[in-house]
Image 1 (cartoon, rainbow, N blue to C red):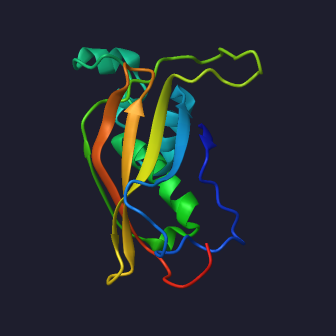
Image 2 (cartoon, rainbow, N blue to C red):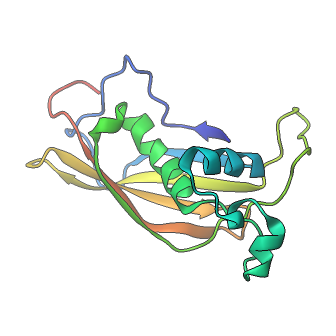
Length: 172
């Protein structure tokens, strides 16, 4: 899996602070390229060996358009934008979403782009915006838009929201 991320945070950089955060502000974007090999690696790591995530013939036999990405893989790659921005995954105190579209992953095994990288079978685009700032609780809600750009820009997740605990007085 390869990613391009505009919210990368060096570990030495302090977390964003509540002061100055405004509703609607974009915290970053992330492009995630998925391949069938990524799905196989995720299946092994997660223990989710359902053949809809690796077998084209099985997936189509049960009425799917083909192999699809794991929902939890999609959810996890989306929230990575938030953890990169906030600098510490422990600051994410709540995360929830609704799965609304499958992420079909085309078999591009063995295909290489001009730069020698693997051709993705699916591309996810993630954008994070501040949805709410709660100074009393010391938290901000980050709303994530997650689309499958390789599938007519279908929204893979809706109501994807992460609540993060942020410091009140540190410099950003």
